[in-house]
Length: 516
Image: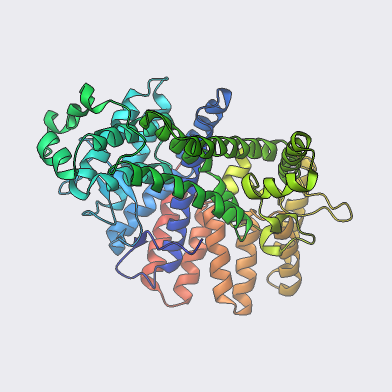
């Protein structure tokens, strides 16, 4: 997977680059939290934990994200870059003037960033407060897809649903699959988009009740019939969904580092369940080849869910143990261990081969900050600072370490002793402090205070680029720390970026007064 295009920009992007990097990382984290919640939202007691994760995120991180967006909109002209797709949808009460009720920032007039973040936050809050009824979510997915489809075609309406899944804006994948199925069944009985959107549905009203009920015609029995195997309108769209599913599986298997692997894994079960459901609900009689492909997707979806549970129970050692158990089960059925391993690697493997190598590449041992809070959730801990790297090997044993061993009390004491020692050294004996902190981050890769102190030490040595990168990591992990924002303001000011320094200082001032 190549680097993604920036989602955000502003009037002075070069000067604001560190602040934009924090904002981008926090948005990526928001997407990741939503995808994780959807992955676990349909699994009984796991659904309660998924909802709790969403609630915790809304309480701890989202206020900072929202405030940063407002500050940058006011002072820097923060806006969507238009270079990266991001689907949005509003309620009538939250829609800003002059923008569609639903759209994509890469295709349509882009609403203010803060308005989009507020609207998605409100939808999350409504999901958390709702008890079991998925009809509202179905309508809240289908209706925006139809509005987008009217402007850009049915295929883009379908992609809007996929985009909502990818950005963590959908909790109930069944509602998303039902909406997509409705689109595809309507496509099957219309000759083209013009007939569907112009002749049958007509022009969407500008506002009011008529806009809210736009698309109700599709609930007529004519548009609710399963589709034959071959349809010139539907088949290419289904094939595109299936190809995309395999592309996502390949991205998991070929990930180049731990953060990329976990981010590709998170959301994969939701998308695979989405594709499987859309095929089964759309087609009257899937072919044997399609049924075989869907069965494999179902197995992979179950594997990903098992991997996250294994991670929760015993870090990466449990994940690799699960993968080994699958190989052994295939070997018992076939009687050929070598063939079983080849089949597993071809069909079921979800752990990149690099993770099985010893010694492990450092870029796997110290993952990036994006999945840190999810790992804290899996480990039932509130602070990422005391989580050990799940990708390092215990010296002399060859085992992958656990995030939670030794005990939290022992890990907390180890981290605090090292931080206190490094803090006392970093002004007078900088090299020693730097060595201490790098060793600490090798074991505890999501320790925000370590990144902050290391940034201060490196800044004094003149390594401004790495120091700034480290401070951005510290803020991504703990965006609510006003002192870190103040230090970012100092760094920016010393670099001559007075405007950006003022923005960072305002955020620091707000957080210092805020109860969050």
